[in-house]
View (tube, rainbow, N blue to C red):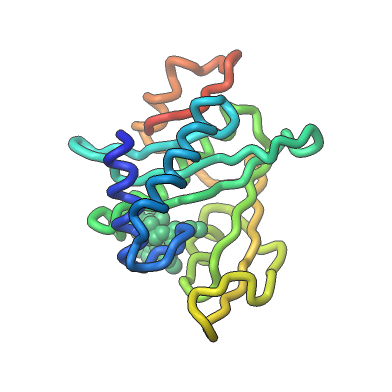
Length: 187
Ligand SMILES: CC(C)(COP(=O)(O)OP(=O)(O)OC[C@H]1O[C@@H](n2cnc3c(N)ncnc32)[C@H](O)[C@@H]1OP(=O)(O)O)[C@@H](O)C(=O)NCCC(=O)NCCS
């Protein structure tokens, strides 16, 4: 699983995706970040959703906890990515629907995320029920002289989307009552 996630993260970065690094992917740094991510998930702080195909990982996304008593009703959606060889075939929507299902099972009310301007990603998320609530001009320095805005979007889980894909329903059926919040999920 770890090797698959690393391959996805490196592949997405090298294809120009906005997932924390710029191409060419600094593999050792991506690996360190992935291990820090997995450690927080193992500690029960954050939740990891993995979209699996028949043979390999298709995509991943995180629900990151702000570790604050006054923000327990929402999480930040981070590191949403679909491996380049699977993009453009509906996997991104399935991944997000799975993350929404996981968020509901965790009892969350809202999800927040930020996107790097210039990738058209606002449209992808708006169709999933997110609304733009703010913009930080020039927050992301992609390269010297190439600063991009960071755009913040929020979805209320009561309103966001959707019919959940069959695979996500199957994954959640065994924990439907959710007395113990799951920290990771495979859709
Ligand atoms: C963004 C991402 C997760 C979408 O996954 P995907 O599997 O390619 O998306 P889907 O096939 O489910 O696309 C669903 C719809 O969203 C649209 N869409 C996908 N990516 C889009 C983008 N970057 N901008 C605008 N629309 C987009 C598709 O055109 C499609 O619309 P259609 O149904 O009218 O054809 C994927 O492209 C990715 O990993 N990108 C690189 C990493 C990244 O930028 N992540 C976002 C971090 S905030």
